[in-house]
Structures are given as structure tokens and as C-alpha cells.
Length: 193
Image: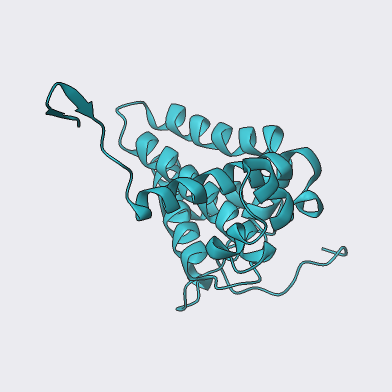
């Protein structure tokens, strides 16, 4: 929105919070590019900041450390997948077409952004609250879509195959917020199963 004063147009100045939000978003985009190019090892707060031209300390004002940054990237990706699934769940497409699109959305992330995909299904090292809420929402939407075609237990099996995990069933859910990739309480996967 601009204002007129004596024939001059004055453009609004971004507020401090708007500038901070834009910087944070730019840091996340740069971190995503580094992650895609070289995996988690390639992501450093110093390099992320250098990519967008801010001081060495600027990234630390937004993220406590690299693990926090990676957790936010993964949480955002899970949330975006949840948004996609919500759109599919609310569509008027036939259930089988909706399920196919949901699975393709997940597979596409795995194929196009394999490092991010792995992060999405890795337990975060920092505070898992936001990641758990995003994962829970996405899981529920996926089960809703699958439940329209098959019974919900089938959804758990399809999801686990898509994320290369052992089947997890609704009955095994824990009461606390799950972490990304941890939707149920189960023993660690070992190579003999």
C-alpha cells in the first residue's frame, strides 16, 4: 500500500518482524538447497548464512544449531505433505485416484529430494513437538484417504512400505506427541525382520 504526499509515492517499509520472517524463509530455502546438493553433512549455519548474504551470526538468531534447522526443514516438509493430503482428501476424486495421488506425492518427495525424505522420517534431535504434530496430522489424513478404499490397517501397511518401515498400526499409538517418523511405539527395526 502506498501513500501520496506532495506528489511523491511513499512505499511502506517492512517491519522488523516481516524482515525477520523473510530472512528465516531465505535461510530455510538455502538450507534446503544445500541439503539437496550434499545431504545433512553439507548443511552448516555458516554456509546457509553465506548463501543469502547475512552475517555469520544471523542464522543463529533464527536457529539454535544445525539440528534445529534440519528439524524445521523436515517439519515443514511433513506439513506441506499434510497440506497436499488434505487437498486430496477434500477433493471429489474417486477414492482409488485419491489414494494413488497421495502415494505418488510421497514417492515424488523420495525421488526428487531423497535427503529431505530421510529427514522427514527420522526422529529429530531437538524439540519434537511441532514435528510430532505435523506427522500426526499427515498420518491421520493418509489413513483417512486409505480408509475410503480399504480398512485403516491397510493404510498403516501402505504408509510403512512407502517410508520403508515395519507396519505400524493405529492401536499401537502412544499418548504423547509422536516424533517425525515415529507414529507408533514399536521396537527398533533390525535386519533379521
